Length: 280
Image (cartoon, rainbow, N blue to C red):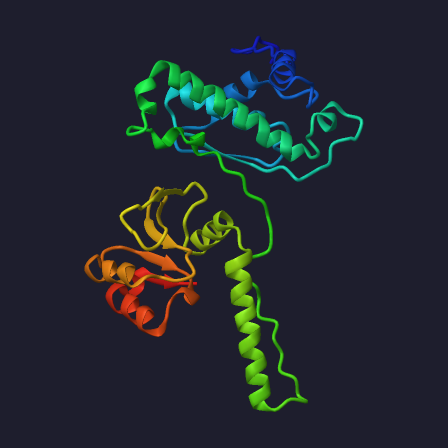
């Protein structure tokens, strides 16, 4: 069939090349895919609430396209970009500009797009940015960066020494557990630990956290995604006032560190909250 196609598009990726060069002051990524092309493909093949997965994130064109498309159409598409930490060439413009890995460019580009969108929103609706009315959805537009790594909860690798007595092995085990708990509390990255705990509790990656200042003795946040929510605290000790709160607010879910509780506090939380309580 040699008939003319119904639609024909021509894309000039020099537009995107110039955008990158003007935004970053250097051509940190050569031959980027045209934003307009990706936008057209996404608009034709997806609908509201769809998740677009790009296994080869590159400079982040897919994210760039979806951010702009969402803003223009009020459709809330989501995306996941995957980019291995491939090193940039030492003599490249990217390396000279401080981007040692391709994934650094992926992240930086999408942050620049977000900054531009938020600045435009500020100019159109400045009242949204009053301190008392700040629109949470503008806080990064939900853009998060994750990397694969080992669990924050170390695997148990203790083995008893056959040359020691049972009592000696028991003391060694107690010290091993104490050292691991201390490592978890003192060496963890709070955001990373929150993410891992929430994922273990079946939360999605696009969860949000909101500070709960009415708790005076502990730092507690409300974590929520589109389906569920929970209060979570990573303090090394849960105060008695916090436990008292949950005695009368038994509809709440609560997550905290196991070592932050003594036996009585743990019993009370389990007694009043039941399955809504979880300690790690």
